[in-house]
Image (cartoon, rainbow, N blue to C red):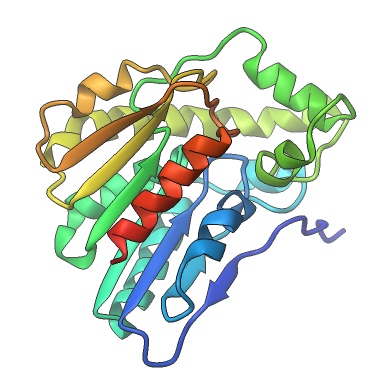
Length: 245
């Protein structure tokens, strides 16, 4: 049976555009996380907000697609934009930031700038963080914004189907460890926003980036991993527009 598609990639390629932004969402999340930021961009900038393999369908889809496929998908999208635009920037959240860091270290000449949100170089979780997200998806109370930005798959009450997620989350920790080891090699001008109330990413991640002069770090004191305050959204939007100016 074909999986129900909850979310899809958003692409706006502007003929003759010199600049493009690649958006990369987090694990089990969705391209819709970036809707407000994309809406703020000038219309003469091309956009590709990718849907990572295994996201946007049912629970089993996620377990069938590996980190290698996520990496390949991001790399192909970046190369496609780079082939037709003079300047390409990346905006990414959570897992997406780890994939962006890999690409910047691989060849920073392809990337003009990066805006990274909630970079999980050190992962931690409050006891209720992951279960709370699942419980909300299964019918608990969740805001419309949470449903729009946090859930990149069709939630399934048959909990045994989530067993296939275990390898994917182990790969997330692997990507986190690898990014810690290479983040000092990033030379691309980068702005990082970390959430002060992040329930999934430790603020110790900031220390891993502190010695890199190419990375500017900013703190969103009242924001969580997926939900940013109005003031913090405005600051992130301003940073995006500045990166694209």
